Amino acid sequence: MKRRKTWLALVTALLAMTTLAAAPGELTPRQLAGQRVIYSYPGLTPPALLLQRIRAGEAAGVIFFGENISSTRQIAGVIRQLRDANARSPVHRPLLLMTDQEGGKVRRLPGEPTLSEKQVGQAADPSAAAKAAGTGAGQNLAGVGMNVNLSPVLDVYRQPGNFIDKYGRSYSDDQRTAGTLGRDFVAAQQATGVAATAKHFPGLGAAPAGSNTDVGPVTLNVPLAELRDKDEAPYDPVVSAGVKLMMLSWAIYPALDGARPAGLSPAAVQELRNGKQFGGVTVTDALEAGALKSFGGTGNRAVLAAKAGMDLILASARDVGQGDDAAAALAAGWSDGSLPGADFEAAVGRVAALRDALK
Image (tube, helix red, strand yellow):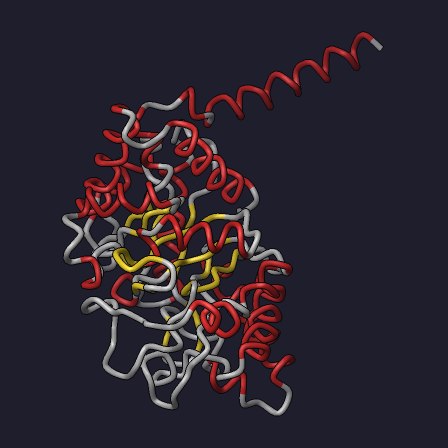
């Protein structure tokens, strides 16, 4: 009995050490801020500065784009390198290693899912096609070591050929169909161990052709009743399915907030948290997007997103310096109290829980 108690005490102590090593109170302001920043880099080789940030426990993860990938073998080697750096980090949690593998034209890795969301919705058996796409995406990403997919898109398109339908990125113009197929994709993909990200809440389906938040500001004057009944409706099934992350859009929705894009708007984030009962991780769209050109530089945008309730900041300009600027601004906000400590730690806690659940 004494030996058993000693063993239990040792296990408890080790678990406590692991928890404390990554607890907010054990991290420097820069490390704490880094838990909320996703970095990116140019080209095929991660720069030394990125590896340094990871070893220091100052980055939550990395997003990969087409320019970072020449083959599955090459990117698998890069991910091993990033994981090796992370093994030396004082934050004992897996990195979030992500990409956009939606299907169709929007794929960073070769292979599945080959069907676009529109093609899935038009398949003879859409549910089976959505499940196959989710399984294929998850297995593809897991095969190279990634653990987060920035998919599925749940936008419900209004007009054929509009912004979201043009590239086949919408399952349907019917919100029930979009929600059902999104749920099927999420459940199938997450069964492979790869977290799914539903986007772009509260919805870009009403954006006309030529509108693009990557390029400039977009305002969608959708009445609140329509926004909730049409655009937000597909999120209920995916929340029920346990989707791990939600990405908010950079469009402005005057029905919720006439001054700020959704990802900078406390009202939009609360619409998701309270209206959809989502308790997982929120993530911004690209922080460098043209839609944010009137909201200052990288640091100011990051702070505004954090104040709004966004957990993860997506610094996706393929520039390690952008991630550093975002993290520095968050660290300063934490230190001077302009970003409330309780909210900051809650966001870090949600990200930590996600990382702990992944490989």
